[in-house]
Structure formats: C-alpha cells, structure tokens
Image (cartoon, rainbow, N blue to C red):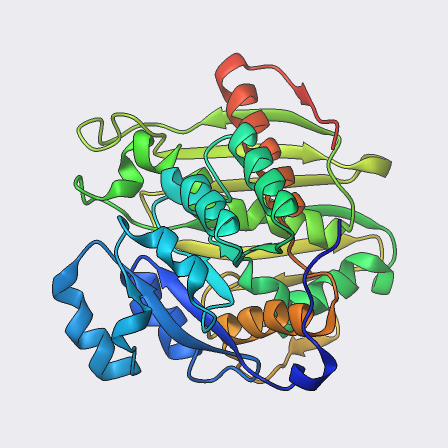
Length: 343
C-alpha cells in the first residue's frame, strides 16, 4: 500500500487535527495537549452538541469553517486544513467514524479500544488501506518513558522474563455512564481499563500471547448497575517460552500497578497507567524519569510518522490484535476453558 506522505518542503509544518467528540477526554487531555505538540495542532472539532461550540472557539481558537456536526462530517473531505481526524467517541462509534474519516481522505487516530468487534477492526484497517491513509490507535503509554523502560526491562536487563502481573481498576457507579452499557462500550472494565494491562503484557514480553489459559468474572455486588457488562474480570495469558501474564480489572475499586519478574530481578510501576505521576522501582532502586505529556507525545509520534513517511508505533493492526485478545478473554471466562490465540 502506498501511504500519502508530505513533501520535504513541508516536513516542518504542523498537521491539523480535528477532534471527533468533545467529551471529558478531549476537553481535559487531548485539546490541552495539542497546545504543547511540535508536529500537529488543533484546528477542527466535530460535535453533536452545539452548545459546546462557543467555549471551544474561544478557548482553542477554532474557526467556523473547521466546525462540523455528525450530520455534515463528510464535508471535512474538502478541508485542506485538517490532516488527521481523532475519533474520541464511545467505543461503538469508533468503526463508523474511522471508516467515514478514511473515506474523506483523512488520516485517523482512534481511541482505544479500537472497536467492539474484531470484524469492525478489520473493516477499519481495510478502509484506511483502500483510501491510502494511516490509522493509529490512542495508546499513549508507548510514548511514556516509564513504559518504554519497561519494554527494555522485559527484553533481558534482569535475565529471562518469567512473569508479568498487573491491575487497572477504577470506581464507576454512575448507572447512566455509557461505559456501563454494552451497546455503547462493547463490554465492561476489560474494554476500558483492562486493555492497558493486556497491552502492557504484550510490550513487556515483546511478543504476542499464544493462549488465554484461564479467565473468570468477579463477584457482582451491584447488579442494579452492572446489568449488561462485567463488574470485574481476571485472566492469565500464556506467551512463548512459558511466560505468563496475569491481569485483572474492575469498576468497583481504584487500583493501578504493573510488575515484571525475571530470573535475576523484578520491577514495579505503581501507579502504572495514570496520565501523570507514574512511579517505579527495580532491584537497583527507584526509576526516575521527568514528567511528560503522554497525549502530546503520542499525537506528535503519529504526526511525525506521517511527515517523514514512517510507520507509527501503534498501528491499527495492533488495535485489532488487542481486540482479538480481549474477545478471547471473554470467551475463556464464559466457557471456563482455555482459548488458543493465532496472532
């Protein structure tokens, strides 16, 4: 496939980003981060809430010509100021707007999880390939120095990796939250915070898992809230060479950590998956890195790849792999049997 790249004369220009969906993550994280980016900037918004527009125009300088609704979204195809569309909608709409953005000739960053089914992931990848545009997934931690160091540690600094363990849980008891409705979220905490633990297992080991050897749903203490999605779930992934990765996630408490064990030492991040304030230690002492804006670095990595004709670190194929793993975890939990993976 021949991906559009930008001419050498324009390699220093900033690419225009349009945010699709102006919820908490766009407002609190992505839009502020785009004030710090080197290779891209916020130029457009797509929203179904007209009442939000004045504030975004004032705070972020969005021009009227770069403001779209969900109904006229296709008009973005003729807007040369928008190079990248960032889909920040409920999970069930990721595939729809990624495909529509690709058909409009725009590169796409899609928030995690990539979609709510593997089939949707495949459709998204195909649409981007068909339109010669790039697809990246919003895996911000690939740009964080703590997690980049974890990738190095898993590669052998303390000998042969034996085990990875992690948990990412958060308290969520708002019955009206879209994350608690399967039709919007595709699942519960596994599709939201648990995917971070699955991701971390894969990049710590540096290879794909070969099976979900066990998984189980946790106790449901609030059936009035957790009607269509799980309240909690735990799993074990098997990787080549007998490496195991144990993970858990929940919507009934706050917990955030990642551990790795090798035959000559171990390490831990706690907190591990937050936007900031990460802390870590190894047998050699405290892990120290300067604070970074994960979202700014993530978006700059994607924009830089476009400007220089490189592959992004977090392509759509990675998102599809992860959805395949999540679906296998659900299957193992429902059947009580191990599920092989062919990734």
